[in-house]
Image (cartoon, rainbow, N blue to C red):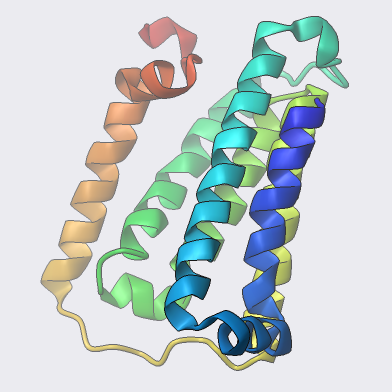
Length: 194
């Protein structure tokens, strides 16, 4: 459990720095823009690796990961349904589109939906820590972005880009549903499909 917690503190702690402009700007002034970005990236990657290792370790040793509640089967179906818009919004965060413009910050919305979906479908302490932390961070970051006035201005985008976002999102969703999630995470979102 401690490995997961350390990873979450490292990863989310690093991502809190940009929400504090004085701290971020002070670090950039002290070490330079390039080194700041490199350090941010390396610490983020290290945190992510520790999160993955910590969560994986909990799955291998269920005795160290207490079950807090048994989610009903229907929560898995809701989670699977919620992941469709989450994945489309994730793709929209990478491709300029009217979807991206309308949602203003599709990545944070995608993270919130992803975390909520996984909280609904999992009842163990590790899942609560992992997905609850990401949900809390995404809510905080969205509020921080609004307060700092950092919502991106609308960017021109064509309807074709919207189609690309949806098609790529649907393809990624189908891949995850039909075996990708099992391959990446070791858990089938819908066990009957494997």
